[in-house]
Amino acid sequence: MDSEKIALRALIRHYWKKNYGVRETHRQICKVEGEGVLSLAMVENWFHRFNNGDLTLMDHQRSGRPPTVEEEAITLALEEQPGSSTRHLAALTGYPQTTIIEHLHSLGAVYKSQEEIPHQLTTQQRKQRLQICRQLLAENEQHPFLDRIITCDEKYVYFDNTSRGHQWLFPGEEPDGVPKKLVHSRKVMVIVFWSISGLIYGETIPEHSMINAQTYSDILKRTNEELHHNNNFRSIVRKGPLLLHDNARPHVATLTREKLEELGWDVIPHPPYSPDISPSDYHIFRSMAHFLKGKIFKDGKQIDEGMKEFFDSKNVDFYRDGIEQLVPRWKEVIARHGDYIHS
Image (cartoon, rainbow, N blue to C red):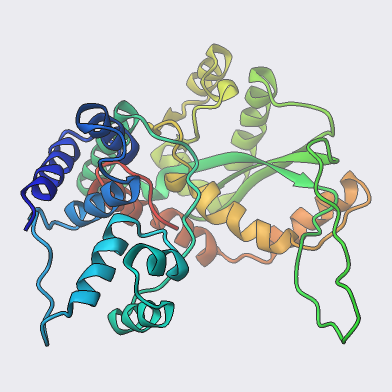
Protein backbone atom coordinates (compact mmCIF):
# COMPACT_ATOMS: atom_id res chain seq x y z
CA MET A 1 0.00 0.00 0.00
CA ASP A 2 1.35 3.45 -0.98
CA SER A 3 2.62 5.19 2.20
CA GLU A 4 1.54 8.60 0.84
CA LYS A 5 -2.01 7.32 0.38
CA ILE A 6 -2.06 6.00 3.97
CA ALA A 7 -0.76 9.34 5.23
CA LEU A 8 -3.58 11.23 3.46
CA ARG A 9 -6.17 8.85 4.91
CA ALA A 10 -4.68 9.38 8.38
CA LEU A 11 -5.08 13.13 7.92
CA ILE A 12 -8.71 12.68 6.86
CA ARG A 13 -9.34 10.57 9.97
CA HIS A 14 -7.61 13.20 12.13
CA TYR A 15 -9.93 15.98 10.94
CA TRP A 16 -12.96 13.66 11.15
CA LYS A 17 -12.17 12.99 14.82
CA LYS A 18 -12.01 16.75 15.39
CA ASN A 19 -15.57 17.05 13.95
CA TYR A 20 -14.47 18.95 10.84
CA GLY A 21 -16.79 18.82 7.84
CA VAL A 22 -15.98 17.19 4.52
CA ARG A 23 -15.31 20.44 2.66
CA GLU A 24 -13.34 21.95 5.52
CA THR A 25 -11.19 18.82 5.81
CA HIS A 26 -10.53 18.85 2.06
CA ARG A 27 -9.56 22.53 2.21
CA GLN A 28 -7.22 22.08 5.18
CA ILE A 29 -5.38 19.09 3.68
CA CYS A 30 -5.00 20.73 0.26
CA LYS A 31 -3.76 23.89 1.96
CA VAL A 32 -0.93 21.96 3.63
CA GLU A 33 -0.22 19.17 1.15
CA GLY A 34 -0.93 21.03 -2.06
CA GLU A 35 -3.96 21.67 -4.28
CA GLY A 36 -5.28 18.57 -6.02
CA VAL A 37 -3.54 16.14 -3.69
CA LEU A 38 -6.92 14.49 -3.08
CA SER A 39 -10.50 14.91 -4.27
CA LEU A 40 -13.48 16.10 -2.27
CA ALA A 41 -15.21 12.84 -3.17
CA MET A 42 -12.36 10.86 -1.61
CA VAL A 43 -12.76 12.76 1.68
CA GLU A 44 -16.51 12.17 1.58
CA ASN A 45 -15.98 8.42 1.02
CA TRP A 46 -13.64 8.09 3.99
CA PHE A 47 -15.94 10.18 6.21
CA HIS A 48 -18.75 7.78 5.33
CA ARG A 49 -16.55 4.82 6.24
CA PHE A 50 -15.47 6.36 9.57
CA ASN A 51 -19.09 7.32 10.39
CA ASN A 52 -20.01 3.64 9.96
CA GLY A 53 -17.45 2.66 12.61
CA ASP A 54 -14.63 1.48 10.35
CA LEU A 55 -11.54 3.48 11.40
CA THR A 56 -8.95 1.40 9.53
CA LEU A 57 -6.96 3.02 6.75
CA MET A 58 -6.45 -0.04 4.57
CA ASP A 59 -8.52 -1.00 1.54
CA HIS A 60 -11.07 -3.72 2.23
CA GLN A 61 -10.02 -7.18 1.14
CA ARG A 62 -12.72 -8.56 -1.11
CA SER A 63 -13.64 -12.21 -0.83
CA GLY A 64 -13.49 -14.59 -3.79
CA ARG A 65 -10.87 -14.64 -6.52
CA PRO A 66 -7.99 -12.13 -6.40
CA PRO A 67 -8.79 -8.94 -8.34
CA THR A 68 -7.21 -8.50 -11.74
CA VAL A 69 -4.92 -5.60 -12.56
CA GLU A 70 -7.66 -3.92 -14.57
CA GLU A 71 -10.17 -4.31 -11.72
CA GLU A 72 -7.71 -2.75 -9.28
CA ALA A 73 -7.14 0.16 -11.64
CA ILE A 74 -10.87 0.75 -12.10
CA THR A 75 -11.57 0.51 -8.36
CA LEU A 76 -8.74 2.93 -7.57
CA ALA A 77 -9.98 5.45 -10.15
CA LEU A 78 -13.50 5.16 -8.77
CA GLU A 79 -12.27 5.64 -5.20
CA GLU A 80 -10.48 8.84 -6.19
CA GLN A 81 -13.33 10.19 -8.35
CA PRO A 82 -16.64 8.45 -7.48
CA GLY A 83 -18.59 11.00 -9.52
CA SER A 84 -16.96 9.90 -12.76
CA SER A 85 -19.08 8.55 -15.60
CA THR A 86 -18.13 5.21 -17.14
CA ARG A 87 -16.83 7.15 -20.16
CA HIS A 88 -14.59 9.24 -17.88
CA LEU A 89 -13.40 6.13 -16.01
CA ALA A 90 -12.50 4.56 -19.34
CA ALA A 91 -10.43 7.64 -20.20
CA LEU A 92 -8.70 7.57 -16.81
CA THR A 93 -7.82 3.87 -16.86
CA GLY A 94 -7.41 3.20 -20.56
CA TYR A 95 -9.81 0.24 -20.43
CA PRO A 96 -12.90 -0.07 -22.69
CA GLN A 97 -16.14 1.41 -21.38
CA THR A 98 -17.80 -2.02 -21.64
CA THR A 99 -15.16 -3.44 -19.27
CA ILE A 100 -15.81 -0.59 -16.82
CA ILE A 101 -19.57 -1.25 -16.89
CA GLU A 102 -19.13 -5.01 -16.41
CA HIS A 103 -16.83 -4.46 -13.44
CA LEU A 104 -19.17 -1.96 -11.76
CA HIS A 105 -22.15 -4.27 -12.26
CA SER A 106 -20.21 -7.16 -10.72
CA LEU A 107 -19.58 -5.04 -7.63
CA GLY A 108 -23.26 -4.03 -7.40
CA ALA A 109 -22.34 -0.35 -7.80
CA VAL A 110 -25.21 2.09 -8.47
CA TYR A 111 -24.78 5.50 -10.12
CA LYS A 112 -26.84 8.03 -8.12
CA SER A 113 -27.09 11.79 -8.27
CA GLN A 114 -25.67 13.79 -5.36
CA GLU A 115 -28.19 14.97 -2.80
CA GLU A 116 -28.79 18.67 -2.28
CA ILE A 117 -28.29 19.77 1.33
CA PRO A 118 -29.99 22.75 3.02
CA HIS A 119 -26.79 24.49 4.13
CA GLN A 120 -23.03 23.96 4.26
CA LEU A 121 -22.66 23.35 7.98
CA THR A 122 -19.71 24.83 9.84
CA THR A 123 -17.87 22.83 12.49
CA GLN A 124 -19.61 24.83 15.22
CA GLN A 125 -23.06 24.26 13.69
CA ARG A 126 -22.36 20.54 13.41
CA LYS A 127 -21.29 20.42 17.06
CA GLN A 128 -24.42 22.33 18.08
CA ARG A 129 -26.65 19.86 16.22
CA LEU A 130 -24.83 16.99 17.89
CA GLN A 131 -25.10 18.51 21.36
CA ILE A 132 -28.81 19.37 21.08
CA CYS A 133 -29.75 15.95 19.67
CA ARG A 134 -27.88 14.22 22.49
CA GLN A 135 -29.61 16.43 25.04
CA LEU A 136 -33.10 15.85 23.63
CA LEU A 137 -32.55 12.10 23.29
CA ALA A 138 -31.35 11.79 26.90
CA GLU A 139 -34.21 13.90 28.26
CA ASN A 140 -36.80 11.92 26.31
CA GLU A 141 -35.38 8.63 27.57
CA GLN A 142 -35.63 9.82 31.18
CA HIS A 143 -38.92 11.69 30.90
CA PRO A 144 -40.73 11.04 27.58
CA PHE A 145 -42.11 14.27 26.18
CA LEU A 146 -43.09 13.59 22.55
CA ASP A 147 -46.80 13.76 23.47
CA ARG A 148 -46.29 17.32 24.79
CA ILE A 149 -44.72 18.71 21.63
CA ILE A 150 -46.46 21.37 19.56
CA THR A 151 -44.49 22.00 16.38
CA CYS A 152 -45.04 24.64 13.75
CA ASP A 153 -43.60 26.11 10.59
CA GLU A 154 -44.48 28.22 7.59
CA LYS A 155 -44.57 27.31 3.90
CA TYR A 156 -45.30 29.21 0.71
CA VAL A 157 -48.13 27.75 -1.38
CA TYR A 158 -48.14 28.85 -5.02
CA PHE A 159 -51.29 29.56 -7.00
CA ASP A 160 -49.81 27.62 -9.94
CA ASN A 161 -48.22 24.32 -8.93
CA THR A 162 -47.69 22.83 -12.37
CA SER A 163 -44.26 21.34 -12.93
CA ARG A 164 -42.35 19.42 -15.55
CA GLY A 165 -43.57 15.87 -16.02
CA HIS A 166 -43.70 13.16 -18.66
CA GLN A 167 -46.03 12.71 -21.62
CA TRP A 168 -46.74 9.88 -24.03
CA LEU A 169 -45.91 11.22 -27.49
CA PHE A 170 -46.41 9.81 -30.96
CA PRO A 171 -43.85 10.22 -33.78
CA GLY A 172 -43.49 13.86 -34.81
CA GLU A 173 -45.09 15.26 -31.61
CA GLU A 174 -43.29 17.64 -29.26
CA PRO A 175 -43.87 17.72 -25.48
CA ASP A 176 -45.89 20.62 -24.08
CA GLY A 177 -43.85 23.42 -22.53
CA VAL A 178 -44.19 24.29 -18.84
CA PRO A 179 -43.34 27.90 -17.90
CA LYS A 180 -40.52 28.33 -15.41
CA LYS A 181 -41.79 29.41 -12.00
CA LEU A 182 -40.86 33.05 -11.46
CA VAL A 183 -39.41 34.34 -8.22
CA HIS A 184 -42.38 36.68 -7.86
CA SER A 185 -45.04 34.13 -8.82
CA ARG A 186 -48.27 34.52 -6.88
CA LYS A 187 -48.17 32.71 -3.57
CA VAL A 188 -49.42 32.87 -0.01
CA MET A 189 -47.84 31.70 3.20
CA VAL A 190 -49.46 28.94 5.25
CA ILE A 191 -48.58 28.42 8.91
CA VAL A 192 -49.59 25.27 10.81
CA PHE A 193 -49.38 24.13 14.43
CA TRP A 194 -49.74 20.42 15.10
CA SER A 195 -48.94 17.68 17.58
CA ILE A 196 -48.87 13.91 17.92
CA SER A 197 -52.67 14.08 18.28
CA GLY A 198 -53.35 16.02 15.08
CA LEU A 199 -53.64 19.50 13.59
CA ILE A 200 -54.22 22.18 16.24
CA TYR A 201 -54.41 25.36 14.19
CA GLY A 202 -53.60 26.59 10.71
CA GLU A 203 -53.82 29.95 9.02
CA THR A 204 -53.19 31.45 5.60
CA ILE A 205 -51.31 34.74 5.61
CA PRO A 206 -52.79 37.21 3.09
CA GLU A 207 -50.95 37.65 -0.20
CA HIS A 208 -48.04 40.16 -0.07
CA SER A 209 -48.04 39.98 3.75
CA MET A 210 -45.22 38.70 5.91
CA ILE A 211 -45.05 37.13 9.36
CA ASN A 212 -43.40 39.40 11.91
CA ALA A 213 -43.13 39.08 15.69
CA GLN A 214 -46.53 40.71 16.25
CA THR A 215 -48.27 38.50 13.68
CA TYR A 216 -46.63 35.39 15.09
CA SER A 217 -47.57 36.33 18.67
CA ASP A 218 -51.20 36.85 17.62
CA ILE A 219 -51.22 33.43 15.89
CA LEU A 220 -49.74 31.84 19.03
CA LYS A 221 -52.62 33.30 21.03
CA ARG A 222 -55.22 31.87 18.62
CA THR A 223 -53.44 28.49 18.65
CA ASN A 224 -53.49 28.46 22.45
CA GLU A 225 -57.24 29.18 22.45
CA GLU A 226 -57.84 26.27 20.06
CA LEU A 227 -55.61 24.08 22.22
CA HIS A 228 -57.81 24.72 25.28
CA HIS A 229 -61.11 24.37 23.44
CA ASN A 230 -60.37 21.04 21.75
CA ASN A 231 -60.56 17.95 23.97
CA ASN A 232 -58.11 16.10 21.68
CA PHE A 233 -55.33 18.19 23.18
CA ARG A 234 -56.35 18.02 26.84
CA SER A 235 -53.24 15.98 27.68
CA ILE A 236 -50.92 18.66 26.26
CA VAL A 237 -52.66 21.37 28.29
CA ARG A 238 -52.44 19.28 31.46
CA LYS A 239 -48.76 18.33 31.06
CA GLY A 240 -47.65 21.66 29.59
CA PRO A 241 -46.98 22.50 25.92
CA LEU A 242 -43.46 22.24 24.52
CA LEU A 243 -43.05 24.33 21.37
CA LEU A 244 -40.68 23.07 18.68
CA HIS A 245 -40.02 25.76 16.09
CA ASP A 246 -36.97 26.95 14.17
CA ASN A 247 -34.86 30.05 14.72
CA ALA A 248 -36.60 32.37 12.26
CA ARG A 249 -36.46 35.96 13.44
CA PRO A 250 -40.17 36.26 14.41
CA HIS A 251 -39.82 33.03 16.45
CA VAL A 252 -37.00 34.33 18.64
CA ALA A 253 -38.04 37.99 18.96
CA THR A 254 -38.51 39.49 22.42
CA LEU A 255 -42.22 40.01 21.78
CA THR A 256 -42.61 36.31 20.92
CA ARG A 257 -40.70 35.18 24.01
CA GLU A 258 -42.92 37.36 26.17
CA LYS A 259 -46.06 35.91 24.57
CA LEU A 260 -44.84 32.34 25.13
CA GLU A 261 -44.10 33.12 28.77
CA GLU A 262 -47.59 34.59 29.13
CA LEU A 263 -49.14 31.44 27.61
CA GLY A 264 -47.03 29.13 29.78
CA TRP A 265 -45.36 27.39 26.82
CA ASP A 266 -41.79 26.12 27.05
CA VAL A 267 -39.54 25.97 23.98
CA ILE A 268 -37.52 22.94 22.87
CA PRO A 269 -34.00 23.81 21.67
CA HIS A 270 -33.59 23.49 17.91
CA PRO A 271 -30.26 23.98 16.11
CA PRO A 272 -30.08 26.40 13.16
CA TYR A 273 -30.22 25.13 9.58
CA SER A 274 -31.84 21.85 10.64
CA PRO A 275 -34.95 21.07 8.57
CA ASP A 276 -33.98 17.37 8.70
CA ILE A 277 -35.03 17.29 12.38
CA SER A 278 -38.03 19.62 11.99
CA PRO A 279 -41.23 17.50 11.72
CA SER A 280 -43.06 20.05 9.58
CA ASP A 281 -40.26 20.05 7.00
CA TYR A 282 -39.50 16.33 6.80
CA HIS A 283 -43.11 15.16 7.23
CA ILE A 284 -46.01 17.61 6.79
CA PHE A 285 -44.59 19.79 4.02
CA ARG A 286 -43.12 16.86 2.10
CA SER A 287 -46.55 15.25 1.99
CA MET A 288 -48.15 18.60 1.15
CA ALA A 289 -45.80 19.04 -1.83
CA HIS A 290 -47.10 15.78 -3.32
CA PHE A 291 -50.68 16.91 -2.72
CA LEU A 292 -50.13 20.30 -4.38
CA LYS A 293 -48.33 18.96 -7.44
CA GLY A 294 -50.16 20.01 -10.61
CA LYS A 295 -52.87 22.00 -8.78
CA ILE A 296 -53.83 25.51 -9.89
CA PHE A 297 -55.69 27.88 -7.55
CA LYS A 298 -57.54 30.96 -8.75
CA ASP A 299 -57.57 32.83 -5.44
CA GLY A 300 -56.80 32.61 -1.73
CA LYS A 301 -60.16 31.04 -0.99
CA GLN A 302 -59.34 28.07 -3.21
CA ILE A 303 -55.99 27.68 -1.44
CA ASP A 304 -57.81 27.62 1.90
CA GLU A 305 -60.12 24.93 0.56
CA GLY A 306 -57.14 22.98 -0.77
CA MET A 307 -55.39 23.15 2.60
CA LYS A 308 -58.56 21.96 4.35
CA GLU A 309 -58.82 19.05 1.93
CA PHE A 310 -55.20 18.10 2.57
CA PHE A 311 -55.43 18.14 6.37
CA ASP A 312 -58.86 16.48 6.42
CA SER A 313 -57.32 13.56 4.50
CA LYS A 314 -54.83 12.85 7.30
CA ASN A 315 -55.70 10.65 10.27
CA VAL A 316 -54.06 10.71 13.69
CA ASP A 317 -51.56 8.00 12.68
CA PHE A 318 -50.08 10.42 10.13
CA TYR A 319 -49.35 13.02 12.81
CA ARG A 320 -48.10 10.41 15.30
CA ASP A 321 -45.66 9.04 12.73
CA GLY A 322 -44.28 12.52 12.06
CA ILE A 323 -43.53 13.23 15.72
CA GLU A 324 -42.23 9.75 16.52
CA GLN A 325 -39.66 10.06 13.71
CA LEU A 326 -37.85 12.60 15.89
CA VAL A 327 -36.16 9.96 18.07
CA PRO A 328 -34.55 7.95 15.22
CA ARG A 329 -33.60 11.22 13.51
CA TRP A 330 -31.86 12.52 16.64
CA LYS A 331 -29.99 9.22 16.81
CA GLU A 332 -28.97 9.44 13.16
CA VAL A 333 -27.64 12.98 13.56
CA ILE A 334 -25.55 11.70 16.49
CA ALA A 335 -24.33 8.72 14.44
CA ARG A 336 -23.35 11.11 11.64
CA HIS A 337 -21.46 13.40 14.05
CA GLY A 338 -23.81 16.28 13.38
CA ASP A 339 -24.01 15.97 9.60
CA TYR A 340 -27.30 16.07 7.72
CA ILE A 341 -29.53 13.03 7.43
CA HIS A 342 -29.85 11.72 3.88
CA SER A 343 -33.52 11.64 2.92
